[in-house]
Image (cartoon, rainbow, N blue to C red; front, side, top):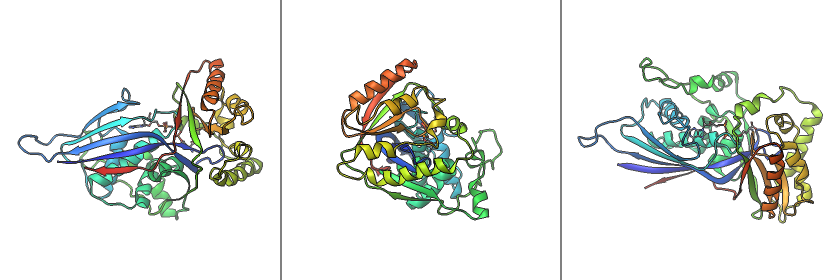
Length: 352
Ligand SMILES: Nc1ncnc2c1ncn2[C@@H]1O[C@H](COP(=O)(O)OP(=O)(O)O)[C@@H](O)[C@H]1O
Ligand SMILES: N[C@@H](CCOP(=O)(O)O)C(=O)O
């Protein structure tokens, strides 16, 4: 019998102005406990068995051909000529990352799947190649990169030549077909290979004094829907507004002590939050009424990922920030939960 665990952190993407560019790994985790038992007379070959506990346990598919994590693992295996899961595969997923809240649950599920495929196939893929596979599924690099390598991370997608662009742009349904059991034998057996070196990243510094307060509304907002409200084009003024702030932010969050006035302004955004406020009632009031002068300890406040979670970076005063945000959301009929989180390390595979 062989067994191992895979532990992947939650992430908060964007941090205000860094839309699709920066991500921060946070101390909520998706943990997979995996065992593979070689078939024998006592345990004849059976299909994968998946169980879940924690967030999303009541809604996540337990069919390995429908579950996001196992579909991604099968994609990685099939790209390496391994067409099926090993016999007698058992996976228990314990999940602390709420679904559809802007805390990177799907990015974590994708990274867990890439690492699962890598382990099951004994592929020993380098980190850059693991990222290529993740980027064929989750096509913005901010969450998956931070979930894989950990910390406060900036990333870009390399400009690909035409053939590689076409390979990387195939519809997700071709990368991850749902492999219906009654489909033909060769369904999905030759999936599109990721081009080499799609994503590139750098880890920024982070001041140990800064923690992340996640204020989590009790409703789900799919990232696809929250991307659907964004415009195709932006004014030069709005792009320069964001670029100026992002350049300052990436260094300001590493300084000791962190400067609240500098960071609060540097976490403002004009590229995604103004458009998403229609989907998240209360968002503009929370980000403009809660400031470092009204709330000592606060450094900056923004939408976490595609929302609806609010991310407040702070050195203290967490309860006052969270309770005042709660009061604002309540006027819009929205209940919230809140958690103070640490900046987490990257994904870890532990073999026992
Ligand atoms: N641990 C998981 N296992 C399987 N599927 C997951 C897992 N986490 C998230 N997902 C899938 O991803 C969806 C949420 O993705 P998304 O809309 O991008 O929101 P988020 O901001 O949480 O990443 C869930 O509804 C579910 O279908
Ligand atoms: N840059 C993306 C990040 C989405 O993050 P998620 O945690 O909401 O999946 C976006 O803003 O759309």
